[in-house]
Amino acid sequence: MSDATRPTAAVIYNPTKVDLPKLRDTVTAEASASGWDETKWFETSVEDVGQGVTAHALEQNVDLVIVAGGDGTVRAVIEAVRGRDVPVALLPSGTGNLFARNLQIDLTDTPGSIRTAFTGHERRIDVGVIRIEREDGSRDEHAFVVMAGLGLDAKMIANTDEDLKAKAGWVAYVKAIITSLRDPGELHIRFRLDEGAPRRATVHTLIIGNCGSLQANIVLMPEAKLEDGLLDLMMTRPRGVVGWLRLWLTVAWTNGVVRRTKSGRALIGEHKNDANLHYETAAVFTARFSKPEEIELDGDGFGKASALKAWIEPGALLMRAPAPTPESSE
Image 1 (cartoon, rainbow, N blue to C red):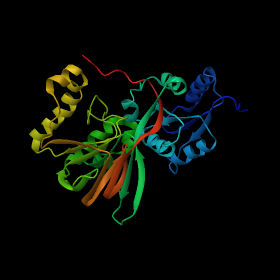
Image 2 (cartoon, helix red, strand yellow):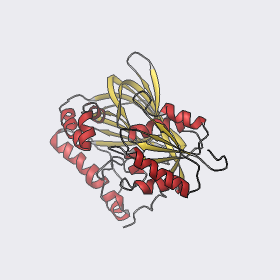
Image 3 (cartoon, rainbow, N blue to C red):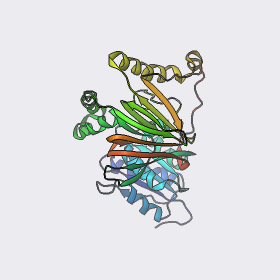
Image 4 (cartoon, rainbow, N blue to C red):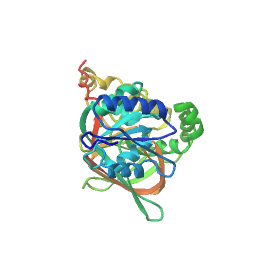
């Protein structure tokens, strides 16, 4: 029987990503040790990837929403929770877990993540929102917490074999990357940053980010922060093998290693945009494409966009996570 004097948590879980009996035992033990009431459990499905069951949990006045699933489940749950004063905690359970990585959550320590869910640090996180215009003129709106991508990024997602991904994880993306690189298509964009003048660009990839780190220590957008009220934009157009090598060197070495330390940032100074890699920031970004383009949100394909408007909802998500570590000074 529920005790109205004690707080209650809800776990929204993807049944294909978790060991449910083991997860139930660990959550139940931690909730009891922390003085919480019996946890409520809500399973996602193909028909409801998270928004509906999360809304149902919120209707029951839960005090904490715990997400056990991959980035797609996390995105769907946050879409339903954003703007509410109910904290969200993550139990990373998918292939990428990009949002968890950017929150510095240890992906290998599930008991620690569960403990953090009940006792951890609370922080307000920005949420990205994007309104996608389709070829027929219809529009649909979605939240994202990591990034939206078009061009090579979205084509890679579209070309990924989901069965291979389920069996081999990120190995599945190798074939998808090779297939996508063979596509000669470029994005022809008319865009606007905030209320600035309209501009044009031809790019290979467009990333609209709320945070900037990927797997394997790759930092696409080194200045992106989850609490700065801004979108970080990355546009790439590498030319030939040399251009790709320079782009990879910047992202993997300069951003992923050198810029992580204060001395490294002082040594190389600020990033200067070039023909291969261009960064911008804005609170609102609007764009129209010369033809419909594949788009992905937090690692899931979302069809094709003829145009879009993206913006940040500052502090729209109350997150239960480890306290941020100080920026490296060595």
